[in-house]
Image (cartoon, rainbow, N blue to C red):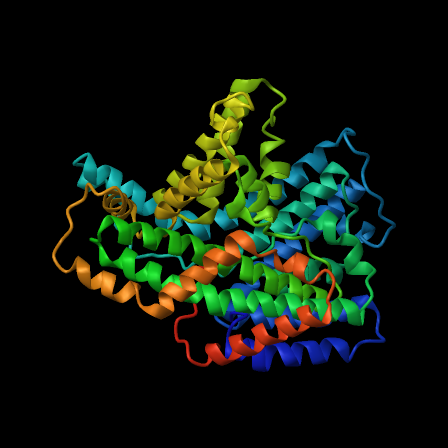
Length: 491
């Protein structure tokens, strides 16, 4: 179930909101329970079996947090006792250390099996096939289906136990409140990745306000417009070019930029809708995008793109690896390694590993050059163009079906690939007036328009009318479209 679907907009959301606000005078815990029910229905709609996987992750991490907080494995005896955060940087007992290891291992094993089993088997077989040892290949018909959103809710649940272990948050003794944190449908399957310490107080203490609800509707409307009016149109351009196999250089660049627009408006649109839904329910989520394509460096890009993931990787991977505290060489290695793992988090493919390696290499290079390089002294417009060009080249690996397809596409972009007959047909398809108009509006929105978060900070009558207009047009166009995927649903 996706936010920009008839099922969600006209059936699920009205019923879920009506059920939630029918409990207006009830406690937050009762409202949390209604959110859990809605979240599990939302998640299990496509495949109910995966409900048990999310439930298992929730139970394991909740039990682990109680063990860590009380330093006692007898959960049934201590779960009802008062809980206080552990002392930061204090010593931890062997039981507490084993408990956090159990949480980390169980989450990563679950994520690793479902996301990387097929990739591991295919890579193993390809390696031995290339070496001429076909007899060593593992012939199996067993394939693993990737559960929806497992990368997102696994990271969220894991952040909870780590925060409790570090002393950044107190363990939540009530399972209902913690289950709500994991299964809340606005951010469940494609983020933002909410750290528990950011949301802990809101789960227990929040108020439903009309102003907050109105802003939520406004942000949701703009996010829906990004998805329906911009991302889908740019996506058709990108799909046509990338699926063609052989295109002229100009068409290849056009397709790459179109995909850059698609993935931005697709994901930032989803994030806007998630943030808007959260506000309707009384929750404040952090901003997840901040005009990333105006960045003057890759370092700045990652402060603006998918901010919740960048923050998670920094706090739970980069800093524990040593960050920048252990000398420049170790810093460069940490940056490269974190982005390499970040690329692998996005998908089980060598393309994503290369994409992460590209960004990790540039982050390390920019850290090495500092503010004294020729690059840092260039005019801002040139630095922005260079940064956007690097990002676009990385997106080729993100979008291409496999590594050979990515290499062929890069050859087309730089005019060194063989262009087969019929490539002109692609040009006839992608330069239609509707696609050119969508592309132009997307470019204007990327580089000239403020973020949805900022537009809705103060809802004047003109801004309210704009949001309502976007919502109405998006609804009308939605009924005419059959192309409506969400890119990040596969992660």
